[in-house]
Length: 122
Image (cartoon, one colour):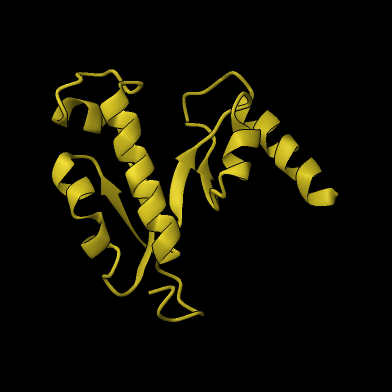
């Protein structure tokens, strides 16, 4: 399991989707072999009583708490990024990004990749 084995070909990724996970994020991040974390804002919105409102202050605060804990522990938090916010995600030091889905026909993921390629060529 990477990162315990630098040549590992398996990566353990966990999801934080409720208040218990956010409350315990510091302890969770101490588990050896943890490769990355995903925060699920939609599921968290329901567990926190915000019922689908991923922009609710409680959801944003929880996401920030998880991001800060991941940064301190040097464990990547996987972010969601689109054309409109890719620059911000890069500045926020997201090292892993989800940039589309199998049902996204907008061409957005390709545009995000173009932006990242241009950044890396500088």
